[in-house]
Image (cartoon, rainbow, N blue to C red; front, side, top):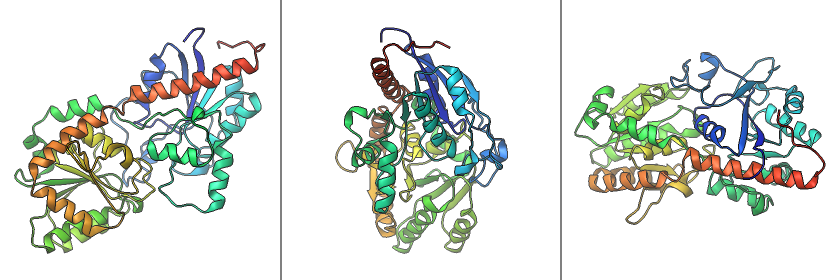
Length: 407
């Protein structure tokens, strides 16, 4: 890219562990002059909202890029509720910053819409990286409102195939779509997992060495349907087959119900509780396969990326957003399996089949690691950079007399 770098603000609710590597890639891009604007820096209690336990991520989230914190005037600041991020002063911040383009992280909190309106008033092109898709059925009037909203962004950055289809169905032309796939730090996960043997990893969680281990990792909440996983294991046992040992990592409102079910059915299940980022690769190393039974509220499912980076296949429901991108169910390059949402007997059959074919599990794991390599922070940053450079170029052409401000 010729000329000065595009002065870009990325507005997001709070430091999200999966976004930080992308910010670092963008910050290192000579064509982008990036500043991240956070709406809120949550404490341990707020960070743990929905997890069932207060915690702070044990990896540095505020290093390797430039950031500012907006004034959040919400009466009850939160990163999980729409009104919890209320930043009316974002307009003044953007005006003073002299930005060429602004990226917003969807429209799930009030501050993201405040930013879009501020960009409109200031004449700054606004790009959205949103994770919505059409795997969830919505009423016609909701689809209409979404169409009106997304077509007011200068560009949209889908996170995957189902996300791209969402924007296309709402009339956004392909020339304004720039893929910025959801991703994790593949190398970090792979390296951390490989640093321990399977035996060492299983010892950390008290797992048997000679059993197939199926992993659930995430919040114990309704949309993730953890009970479907346990019911499938019970169905395997009821059929007279050896059920895989279940490793359940995480916490949340449904954990008690899940533990009670596992106890009542005498299932081989280990509830590990919340596991932080530096140690979670051990859970994937200890497991043979990840199971994610979520409904359409799982707009992507980054635990699938994590598992695949560690060389583990995944079984997901057909409502999980990453399915069309990451799961190849057939052939020599299969990376996992997909089952109809809520179809516990089908999930049970898949688990039983894999338990009897460990060689296939290993082949799928190798294919999974290869496939997820395409979904990296560098790839996501490339898509975002292309989007802001495109809209900035268009803005310059429309306003040739307006000088670019360097800040």
